[in-house]
Image (tube, rainbow, N blue to C red; front, side, top):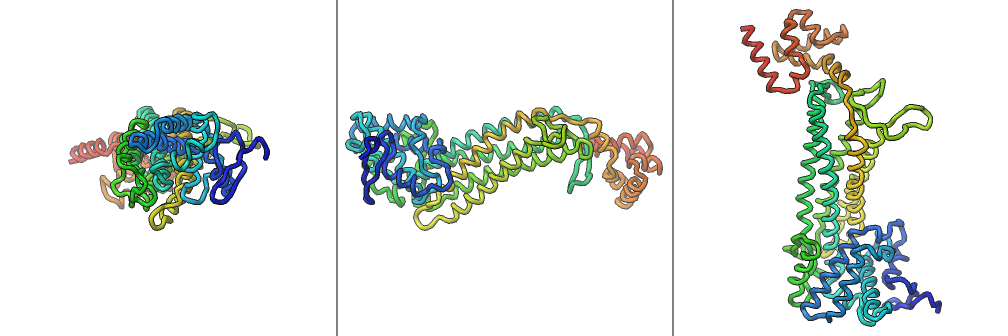
Length: 478
C-alpha cells in the first residue's frame, strides 16, 4: 500500500484515498462517476457555505437534545466554520452535475467535516470518533439538507444581485436628470413617433430596474422558509425531540435572518417551484437589461450613418482591420449575459417540472443554473454602469434636429383640424423634404407664432402642457 494513500471502505468495496485529502470514499466515487463538465463543486462557494451552515446548526441542536457529546459537537462546529470560511474549497472535486439528488454533494461536506473533526479530536483523519453519516448527518437527509442549503445560497445570490441592480437604478436616475432638457424623436416600430426627452427614456429604464428590484426583494424573503427537519420524505423520521426548534434557533443566530420551517414539508420536498420563481425574477431583470442595452446600441449607431443620438464611452478598439472603429462592447456584453440567464431559466423550468413523486432530484442542475445567472448579473451590471452608462453623452443638436424634422408632428394638425388634414400635411412634407412646421406655415394652417408654440418638440414631450397650449390657441381662434 502506497504510504501516500489511506484505504476507505463502503458497501461497494474499498478505495485508495490520498492521505492529505479530507474528502472520503463517497466523494471519490462521485468524482469518478460524474466527470462531465469540469465545473467542480468547490466553485459553488455559497452552496457549500450553506450546507456547512446547516451542519453547524445541526451539530449544536443535536448536542442540546442530548444526541451527541459536546466534544463531537464542538469539533463538527469548528470544521463547519472552516468550510464556511472557504478553507477547504479544494476538497470539493466532484462535478456539479451529479445523479442522486445531491447526495454526493451532501456526503462530500459530511466527509470533509468528519475527517477534519477527527483530526481536531485525535490529530488523525478517519471516522473513529466522528462519522460522516452517524454524527455529521444526524437528524438530516440529503433530501432536506440540499433544498434548504439551496434557499440559503439563493438568499445570498439575490442579495448581491439586488445591490448591483440598485446601483444601476441610481445611475439611470442621474442620467434622467442630466438629460431632462434634451428633446429627441421618440420611435415606435423603429419609425419616427412623437418627441420625447432623453431623460424621459432614461426614466423608463430606471423604473423598470426599480420594479425588478422590488420583485427580487420579495423573492429573497421567500428563501427564509426551509425544509430542514423533513428528512427523507417529509415525515421527520430520525429527528429527535426538540431538534427542530433548536436547529432553527441556531440557523437564525448564524445567518442573522428569520428562517422558519416550511408549512408543509411534503410540498417542500415534492415541489421546487420556488426556484422557478427565483429564476423568473432573474430572467425578468435580464430581459429588461438586454432591451436597454439594445436601445443603447441603436441610439449610438453610426457614427456617421446611424442614429448617433448618444455617444457611448470608448473602452477598447473595435476592429482588427478597421482603424478607429469603436464597438458598443459593454451593451454587447450585457446582451450575451442576459441571453445566458434566459437560457438558464429554461433549464431550471425543466428541472422543476421534471420532479417526480416525493422528491425533486434535479436540484444540482437547478443550483448550477441559479448560481450562474446570479453571478453573471451581479458582476456584469456594475461593469455596465461604470464603463458605459455613467459616460453616456447626448448629441444635443442632432437630437433636436431630428425631432423638428419628423413628419410625425403632423399629429398636431390632426388634433387641431382632423386626421385627413394631418395626413395631407405629412405627405406634403415628405414629398418636398421639408418640416411639418414649414408646411403648416406655408399653407396658412398656423401662423408662425402659433407654429412656434404648438410644434415645439419640447412642448410635445408634456401632454398636459401641450393640452393647455391647444386650449389657449382654440380660445384665441374663437
